[in-house]
Length: 568
Ligand code: SF4
Image (cartoon, rainbow, N blue to C red; front, side, top):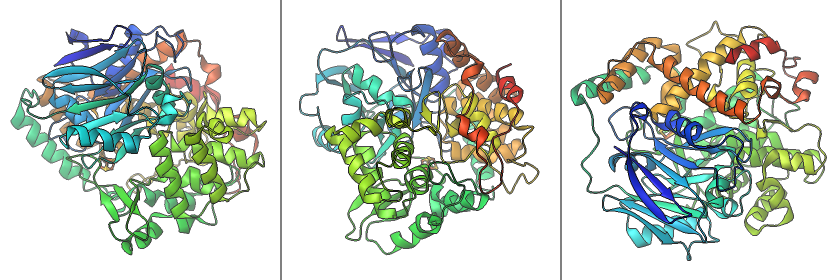
């Protein structure tokens, strides 16, 4: 495999040999290692010195279950920390098929360009007809030009304008956008004047696998085990939207800007209700695969009554943060907002929390979905309200003088209240990426009834374990939903280790996942310390320590020493 280095200042692209220490890395582990090796932690995130890295996971393009996610890394303009955000879709698998271990984008182009990457090589092409367009138009135009054997990475208007909540899109095999949403990485891509990357994965020789039979056998065993977990049927039938009712029941769904833990309108935005609505609409799907090889089909295709596609897919985080946290209980409006966010290329989570903060400031009535939709439209037209929420929750809250701003290190909190889910709260506080549930979400599980997510003590070690586990999963390029069963059924990890060993031709230890994840966390933490972050930044916003949540009467009371111990 090769590393593709593109220098947009010079306008050149070269393939380089993979350094020996990068050979066993991929996904988040590789993006973070390259950033730590090549980017000055003190650099301006939107300046010449930052680099944007795209890296498929270690297992991309193989028969390993639910894998092929693409990691995107850079120094984040939203948090100032190192950042990795990953997306489903076909892009990771296509890059792996081309033998590309990572693309390193450095420098800044004079004008907007896009890259075309194929087995013939790399072209840097002027993006004249694409500038100012959203992701949906950009995808259509490039598909018309290059046919359907491609996948596309792109930014919308938000990334071009370097809005701090901007995301990077990558296409599914059927050309729906999927987002590397968090951390404002779309703004980094926009700052380099890179509009898109077209990947033509056709006609390649396939993936190098040291022991194909070993990989096949271990992957089969792992897939079988994953499907036996008790939460899998809910995920298969309702997608992540099944969490609306579950987290609402727990009293942990963010409501009215994290001032309550239960939402009266939860049933109307639940997965069960969505399934009922979509069952009557032409062309809708409650099951959709964002990538080839997915076992679970947790995604969906949301259509309107006429059967026109509105968005794919509508997920729990959007339902929680645009829905309950803003007290909006209209699925059609939430789906419209999701579509616009995908098109302009912004993170629905940071935008959802920003809308709730604008409601707290009295700028939008609580629950007024139509007014919220108008604000989101202004991201595309660059209206004043759009500039606010397009730059995320922190900018919105600080500009409007709101005291209760749900962010950690500048990134908005996900759709789980940390006063109930306290292990997740430790992750929000201490992760290397700002508040991010995907770094280590400590949810209760029917397969692990002994875990009490609301106990004030013992959450630090839980979060520490989960943060290492998911740093490794993100490095493999595996979808985290398929990895969840391994937490409750640790015996499956031996199949995972056997599969990775067979792919790499290495005899990996049974602690492989923890060793890999711990290494990744250390690399990222060292970068952040060099960028000026310390333990004092590992704190939740004050109101979580001061205001008792109505549902369990608790504040966030995990001792700070437990949080600080995550990195000791
Ligand atoms: S489970 Fe969902 S997110 Fe994961 S690969 Fe399948 S469709 Fe994509």
